[in-house]
Length: 455
Image (cartoon, rainbow, N blue to C red; front, side, top):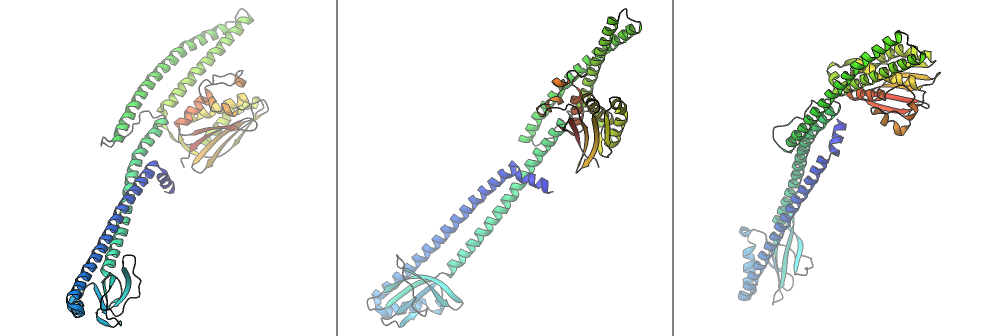
């Protein structure tokens, strides 16, 4: 579970979705912040305008009717049945209150615009307030202010709405991004799985479409059409190759038979005998080459995949040791087998042929008195089949190249062969979803076939 999640989090689709979620979240956050700032600014502006209009009305009342009229106007505003946001305090020149709904003159300095902010004690606790003061002609002072509780409550509601809206936007954005990313990854994953299956040799497999005719369906259709064309071309080429191999193998077999008959009839001279024997050897080499080419074509076609079953590589290696032990013993080569068990799913015939090629190459390239070792090792989720020798080895720069058909290194030119042995092993490994690893045995070569474990 952890590995698919890590793969998903590293995917480009998830990063792209995350980028758009962040962009969407910032855009919504900026919009909500703008609404909040504008709403608070509008409330503050209306509060200031209301305070100034109320103060102007009181000053006009004072100008028209004097201090007595101003007292009546303030008392009318602070009457119990007129309870509201307005705060008033009228004091005489000695500081004694004449009319008010607050108890004391606030101890606050006005700002540059003449506004003071202060705290006033009311029945339900302290409230924030903001207002202006006015000095009257007779020495009295007037304070006109507004209780900011409603404004602060609204500000709190706006902040809560901003937080919740931002959180909801983030959750929905991330959730939507994850769903979109998951859907895209599922479609891409289906294409990748199909491609991996095709790369293992199953050229008949095709990429499934959803029927929505979207970009992925159109890409799948294009890839399927390309694969069908590749399959058709490869099938035609394989047919031609098989026909050529079969057509040439038959006359070569007949030619070899006639030469063997001539050899049994006692040639006129030793030179004729040698010539016939060498020609028979060349025919055997050509027949072996054609047989190897047909085996490689058969492995790459994937036709053996239908007959694959679970088998024990340990038992297979034991059979190879029994088969090649006498040949190694003739050259005093020690063949060691580290018995082990490892179950894989595969074709016994093809795996036997691959292992036989590896051991045969090891015997050819190991000097008399050397050592060849086989081992089957089980590790986490995989089975390794290792063939190591103390022969000439393969230089590291050439280890990938020798897996290609007809590649023979300079130090193996004198050894009989066509350069198809390791190519056939590589083709059989690909058919079984295995990796082939060549490494230095110090001295010699170590070849490992790494299979996914079947149990």
